[in-house]
Length: 411
Image (cartoon, rainbow, N blue to C red; front, side):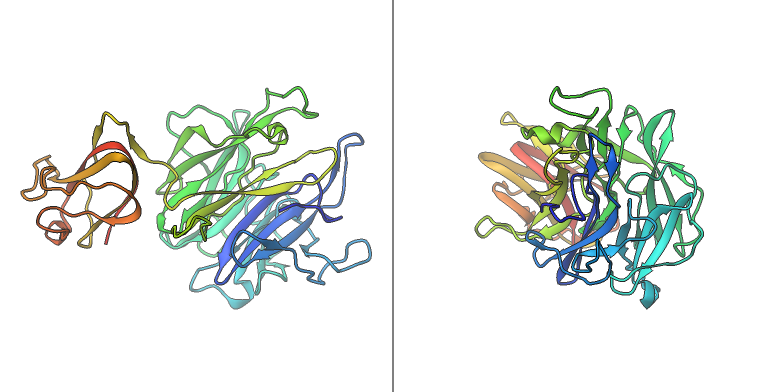
């Protein structure tokens, strides 16, 4: 999508995308910056929608005046247009008049907004609800059904480095004291945004796609300092995170993506129809480009990957094995998301928590699995029923060759 309307421009940013029943909704900042005069146009909050997450329209909403006309897709022009960040509230106790909520910077902190339809917005209260942080970024929140609370993530500085804080709330107004995220032994890097969201296929897992900023670098053709890329991180509690240091989305060959403030991953991962014949649904996520372009407009580009395909356990042609930690499951079948080459394969063995192999579920009993599937039911010589192991700790032993394993789950 190209931000080419008069109220948009070359500094459009902070995109949010989510599926809302039969439509996909998108919100973003519209703005233009003149690099020579260093003057910016008034910032506005824009709206777009789609029926498939691929083709987007900008409806004329008739809500907000821009240079004497309301024929535009602007939904908000008041306080907080710099980084207005809406979401649909799935809290079962949510009031109808605030079925959609948002956070945005203003009045010394983050201010809360509500809307009955995602289009018409108003302040929930004048006073900011979160005040500790640096809020000139995409600061976001959502209802966390697993933890039964609202969860929020925003930017702050830690030892001079852009970092991420989090806090929670039961009512969206009163929030806990913000805490910095714990990245373990990962080195400190400038994380400009965070794009944290629950994964809809496994809501107990939080996924984050920060924009990593390298302020000391600059390509010779760029007019501003810094380069960026998109990275990836996961958490099960919102506080302790595993952050991969390799880029998830590299800038790539387009020169404009090697300019500061580009490669900002939008908040939201959605399922979209694959254009590959007879393939299953795929995942779409979106990233910005052409930011700070002297002539032209920002663009939002769609990237796709296989369902659950964020990372994988990979085995080369010569083969490899790995053993899971002890885990307890409910259900009776093990399903795997995997792919192999024509010569590759994958087998699964069941062990107890002490490493004893379960009779009838050894590698020798296991089917030889090959192909490319999102949900393959694993079986052994005696069948696929694992119900007798449910509720007890087991370990899964995988033997693989020229294969990738993306995900496992039980049902």
